[in-house]
Length: 441
Length: 114
Image (cartoon, rainbow over the protein chains, first blue to last red):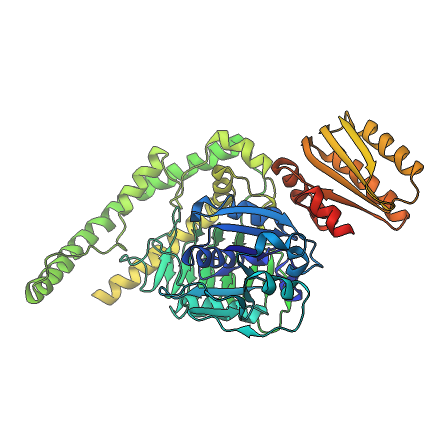
């Protein structure tokens, strides 16, 4: 049996997403089309033909030759105004041994004991059609009236609107979809229960995460921001300082600016979309975070100033660390008591306690900025010049992003290295520490 | 770059392209196809078989689009067949696949045109 996946059609409900391929919209934290490919794997189908139309390049770039899934994927073209039966009639004989057709956006889950129907005929479930036998293929091509048999052991969830997409992801995050979210580096003491975090993700200690949530690969979350619950960040998402994202779906290559609040929305690039009715607005933030122009002498001056500030603050930071050490001793004593009472074999250190003096020393050495990021390297200036435009409230990084990860990092770091933000970060952190000390005493 | 043109039926023609379709060869391609079409006013569909095209750049694609416009003027169409992986990527990146009808083989294109 072979599989035929129709991916090139245009749907009105996807228009607010802009230039986003609907087969690649997230279902949990992986693209919708991946659930189709996994269904093929579950049913032992290895020959897959993907019919391309709109967004052909993006879809082929994701699926490749299918070796990631152990499939043999080939590509054909079908104009967006044609249906799958138009493709079948080009050469009906090659499909007579059976073909699984996926004809529209649908989330698929396959039960572990499920198998492809054995008998000839047309078997259908929502947008999934299985044709077995030449007569079934001929009837389908002619679009005759035909009786369909149900397919057991599969779970389908059609996606006909943005609200369907939104709800699909909510169900996925809450663990209510048959095919669950892909595993990530979750379930650590710093990530809440029911969450997954991808690789190459920067999560500063001051950000708050509330599960269930899913963070993709190559994401950056800004200091003092809050993410979750029921939130999904796809790959290459940057969340600015102090942003607040709840019950939302943030698609690939999106930058959420500083202090932006997003609730119950879909963000696709610079579009903020209400999933209930598909209305959207374009976000252009004039209060851009990063510095607009930097010459090398300015970088060196900023670095020197940072080092001087760190040098001045170092004695104070050492005192803070000393006080923390004393109170940590008390906390460890409390923890030790709990361990003794409950008979636990280990204790978990509190990841929220920073070493301030160590950070100041790293700033003086030139290994860190005051914000905690890696400092400017002069050889980055050329990259910076190439990526001259700054980051507005939310925008589509896709046009600017380069496969070179370093350029992405430069763009992200540009928005967080200003001295003003560094001092504001310090002030807020010191105030928070003082408040905590006041409560403890 | 060479192109061999022949009529398959009264209204259907096929051109088999061999070589590179780039800025250096596109003028020859255009003149050959234009002259042939002028001599065959009844041809409404022209299949371009491109399995032997090893290189296609933006000029080459522009040339094909120019032929597409000529065929549109006579209420006909250009059909593309047998793209290799490299040439397929050019069509995808430029979204030209949304304009042309593209078949996997010339035989399929001929069968669909009948």
